[in-house]
Length: 142
Image (cartoon, rainbow, N blue to C red; front, side, top):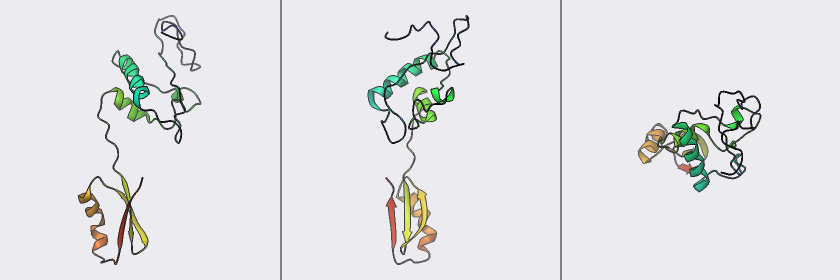
């Protein structure tokens, strides 16, 4: 192992390092990258490693806290949603949200909605179709 001895309380979150003598303290690890929105994306082997390390301790009864919950920081980054990460740790299937569509009717945006398939799209625009518009455009947001 590289770094601080696992039997020694960490020195990373003031007032949350549990330096008393009960032998119990947080386990914390650092991830290299800027995971704030618009920068690096936590994925691949780095994500898999973070999930596996966290899962090991979670299965032993540990709670999961992000550094930003204990300090004025964004760690592990504003681009890492805690619910998403915890669900990965718990092996909960993560379903991406449905895409959003903008519905433009006769040149004016009339609705923005999310839908997973064509049937859901049809249900969303059904009332708009009753008005017999000249032109309907659906644009999927990226």
